[in-house]
Length: 277
Image 1 (cartoon, rainbow, N blue to C red):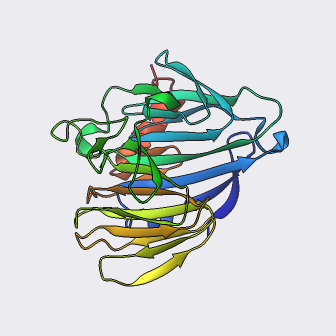
Image 2: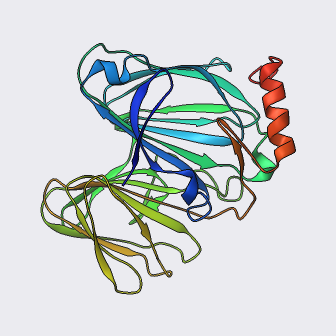
Image 3: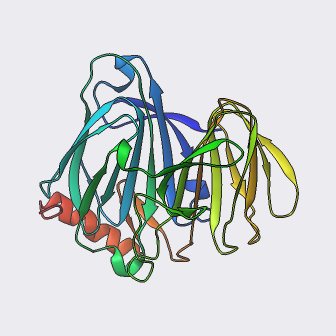
């Protein structure tokens, strides 16, 4: 079960993937879910704040959020869209709601960068809902492929592995009726599933099954044979997997590096106004 908390200027959210799981689910650092129809829970948004050393992937289920950053990047994140930001050597950005009422629902995933890319040039990409490839499995599961590959379909964020080995698998699964969905996963990958509607029956590579309930995360043991998920009509879940980096994780708030010295440099750069220039 996730941990309720507040972030930004008081946005209410649930921290699904916490620091205790960073090593187990390397390269993933954090997963937050926000979901409220009360403007007091989200209206203050996330004013200017810094990042260095990782990527943020924000997936909006419902609502509108405006992104602005110190590189000049700007975009409107809205229903079904994804914001993929590479902080690299440093960026200062804001994420502010562009609505005063209605539902605000979505997720933000933090994806670690390998040591040789932590000081890369920052980047930002808006992926609108219609740009996310979708397919429906023969069993009737609608699959949105945000990143990676599933059943021959390449995701919206698809980078050459030779250039960017940390690209994850990121799927949003919609069970339109009672159905099963199988996904192959390399034995080397760490993987998890998060259920945000209904519940799932998960069968791991060892043949053992377990139920993952609403707003629960299940850590998967793939063994190279992938995973089988079964859900009833209306069930929706995220399936996320990636190649671990196997590197030290040194984190201080919005900075994620490999050593304490690198963290101290990040803080110094921010305090002296050099981060994000």
